[in-house]
Image (cartoon, rainbow, N blue to C red):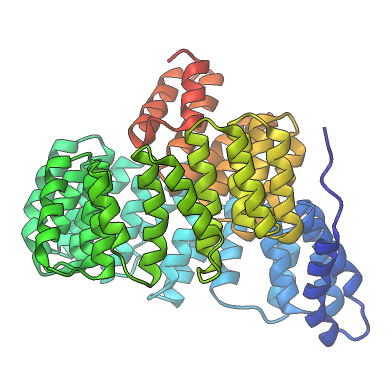
Length: 553
């Protein structure tokens, strides 16, 4: 099993930059050695060592910011003893506010002291009635040991009456959390309380719709949504919320219908088109296309671009090409040029498509992002042609023009991974990290690739830990973390993290990972439930397809 990469020159530079501010406050250098050690440990994904080093630096310097950083890292690393010591120092040095209170409550939950956590969370809401509830939601979502504990504490919060009495948003948010925690009785209690407190409020109806949808009562949810539709004509925000619920029902036609109500602008038209495309409702999309086409004799650039995109989806590629080529200068023109090349390829005019992309790539007047995207699009089109050599050449020329460009390297790494060339995918991800040591996307992607496609699980764990330190509430990173824990055989912890990720984001890949874990641990009926959920979200997801094939489903 390979070890984590040694600190590079870029890592050293990043560490030096971090300690410069501390050097000014700590001229004796008492904390600098520990701080530097902490930075190196972070760069290596060794969060336990990083937390200890930051705590040592905070003690040496008597610095409240370093104490807060030590607490944060220790909590992410689940080093509760270190976190408690760092929190004590943070408080002693004058730390206060939401972040400290949330850290204190998180530690109580981790220790299994629900009573202390409840008191601290209630105090937080009492002290900051307008905003404290948001911190409470965050602690329950990310800080609890598991969903059952979060549900227990949430129920006690409801019992105690500490949720801001007249704050509808807070009540709706807590109801949504109960729902995501799979607590139907508690959800019903909150919904009933909200109905009583806020009679006639349409957002209460939306909470009820969400509850029905999660319970699988889709017909009842749709009927209730229909009663709210007239209210959307004069309330833009409500219209968006109703559309969101229809999206949750995978009813994209009604999403578009809701958005069609009330005043329209280019953004609304674009959203309607997007949802109609997802619903594959070509008749309605054709009506929208005809409506927009007839609306003005000389459509503006945004309208011409949208008309081109609509025509392209409707497979009216000649018309799409005319619209794209008619887009004048500006940001829309750059997109239109790239889309034109794509349409030419669809029209089997590949030589013209590639020539137009070469023109974009060599156009000194074009912005760098457009030229860069020209190389990426060419590679994608070559891949569609099954022209591996051409795809590789497009990426190579792009990197010659834009050395170590992260977007090109990232696209090529994903291409290597799709072709099962994990070594080359890893090499490109690492090239990104040499230039950008803190690239969260590259850290997570490389860590996940190693966890999913190799047996180098410890190395994958350390990379994902680095990403998790930067974005501890990122559902995709929590999914990667859960998946690598599963690969490491830490199944109970893995299940907790994968459930947490799915609570935060309904995603096919996350659902497939949880389903695979459940299947392997003998809970096949529950696994089938999550496989089915993943199918409904994205039936073509690669992780889902691999798992279904593996189990013959």
